[in-house]
Length: 124
Image 1 (cartoon, rainbow, N blue to C red):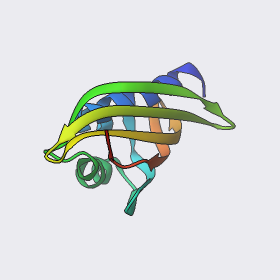
Image 2: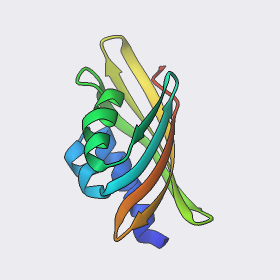
Image 3: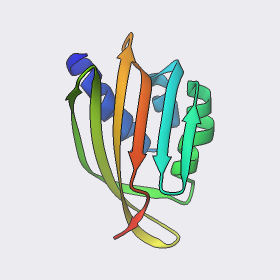
């Protein structure tokens, strides 16, 4: 998959941290196969519209503010890419940190398959 695909992982993390869901939509295939696991729920989206309308805004709500990206690491594993990212932020309850690990594949320069594991908001 190579460097371009690895850059997609970083761009996805940065767009998510910025809550730039339109940028996420541009990074993922219209028919993306997305699954995510957070501490309280499993999430699924079969297309980019469901991902940016239903899933990601629930992960980072209006009251959640990301203050800084702490780390982004990416690499390849077998036939897919891997990205791990963490950020620090705050909400009505105070400061938090969150980390996610994602495996993904790309087709025509867009993420077409992604699996994400999230730590949930950990109070910092």
